[in-house]
Amino acid sequence: MRAVRYDGQHVLLDPRAPAPEPKAGEAIVRPIRVALGPIERLICQGQTSFKGVIGREMVGVVERVEGQPGHELVGARVVCDPIDAPLDSDLARRGMSWHAPDRRELGVCGRDGCLAEQVCVPLVSLRRVPDAIDNDHAVLCVALSEALRLAGLVTVENKPYVSVVGDDAVALLCAQVLFSRNASVRVLGRAPERSLRCEKWGIRRRCVSEAGRLGDQDVVLVVDPTDDSLEVAAGLVRPGGKVVIGGGVSGATGVNHAESPSLPVARFIEREARVIFARGGKVVEALGALSTNAGALDLASLITRRARFDDSIAAIRASDSVDQLKVVIDL
Image (tube, rainbow, N blue to C red; front, side):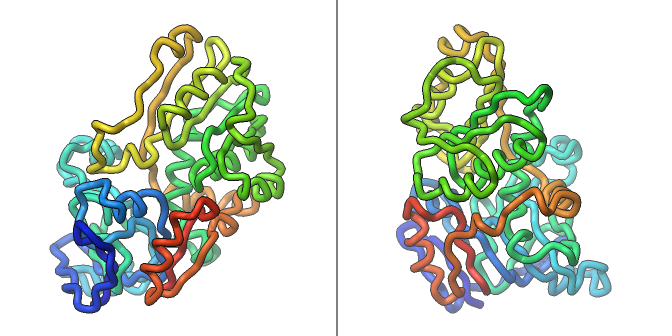
């Protein structure tokens, strides 16, 4: 089996990777399309402890379910929640697997990823993709699920002023979701190349360095927190406003939290801001949003590079470029 893996020093296309061996309750999936983003770049730069097959976002076809040859998902097109925890975990039963201390994350921690000809995943993590949703939208369901989780923490009443700090794929999806709910949204980013997308959606976009710190924003949403972005948020939020902080790469399982950003607590206290943290998401909610609001969400234009499986390594290297949002590999 061929697979792209990180061995602790290099990322390589392994032509003789061992085929996955499923246990009861697991399925073998043949990935059709895999999306790569900031977490994969972090892994391939050696900034996590993960070694193994990379890739956490995919759309694929179920080839078999261990011990259940007639299972209804065999032959179906599916997406996968990348984080799983033992089913007897209290947090897993409450739908919050991403908080379980013994969780695993596809292609990030404790489980080989999906940039391979086959991947083994828990059956409970799989969701069937409706026929009306194409592969370009399906492969970005994980990113959309994370955006929906963050945007869902924002109460949209009386057209609030919302600033989204960041312009990666999840940030741009957050902006789209909130704009579709009638919020007054602007994106504050660092990559001018992404302005055209915001213009197409009717969403305002400014360079974060040019944004005034007037303390007049009802909600500030920080998708991938850094020391700089949190300082920006502290200057933007109005007294009594809300700051929603996503996990970004800092929230990925197995990331070294010693290097996590510092929260400007005094600044937020001064504003009496309500600070809310969030991470994770559920792909079933992303599928639901795509089924009911397909016209309001543009996922396809977030794909900035496509490559064949044989060209995966070059595509991963190219993903470091500032003009890349989501790199998609076709298998």
